[in-house]
Length: 340
Ligand code: SF4
Image 1 (tube, helix red, strand yellow):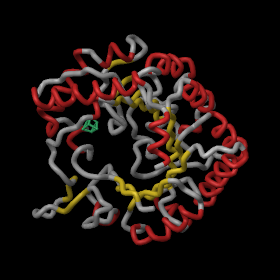
Image 2 (cartoon, rainbow, N blue to C red):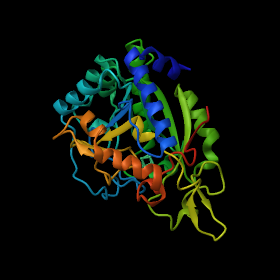
Image 3 (tube, protein in one colour):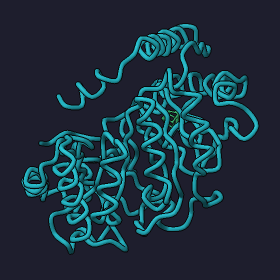
Image 4 (cartoon, protein in one colour):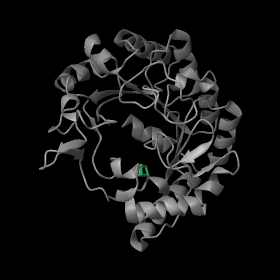
């Protein structure tokens, strides 16, 4: 309910109109089997950095296999993006790859986007949230923070979150909650996530209890994406709803749902890498589909370009043949579940 009012309070005439145009364009595209793009991105994900202080084994950044240039988003580049999208974009997600708090300008970025009445959201591992950082983040106007706990047990937490400690995450969460009390605000809304592995799926009830004690606004379980399906059965809870993969009759493990399911994302959302490349979505972590760069064109020029539309056309007609889209759960299978 709090999230609903957050979105409602940031709607303007131009943002509502833009959302309608995005929806109508997508509808026509599906009917005609040809891309019709009427709206501009309603949600934009901007990568503050590719650097991270964890080494999670199922994350391309964590294992050093992102396959693209590492670096931080420059503040002036970020401001240019916000200036271009401020009237039509409702939410800016300050994460893609990497730990956002490793960019020293992150607070100024949140503050600038918030000054344009854009809803800002961030996913962080929370270990850099000391008292000072937490207060800066709350004062900057961040509206939603997503933090993964994975297990109420330190041992289980460390099995996936290599390089991190549960105590550090819990301290970061407490610092954020204290800063909210100090500045008498309910923001950022706290969303706690558990990534469902085989070893922690039985701990969901404990996770919910912990989430409530930490005064979380949203508590959810997210299914795991694996980089390699070879030993999937040892890692993830196949056969439960907290798993995006299933065992097929021939014994193989594959993503649930149909490979040619429709995807609406490139009609209302896009993602930007730290160095200015526009890619269709956060699922394209290694930037396989480079749709244009804001170093040479405006975001809107790229959004309406022939190259972007060719990508949309392929998505409508041949999703199952596209390397990233064919392994993506969007439109195929539900990947997160609110549990408290
Ligand atoms: S199918 Fe997945 S990877 Fe492809 S554009 Fe949609 S969300 Fe992105």
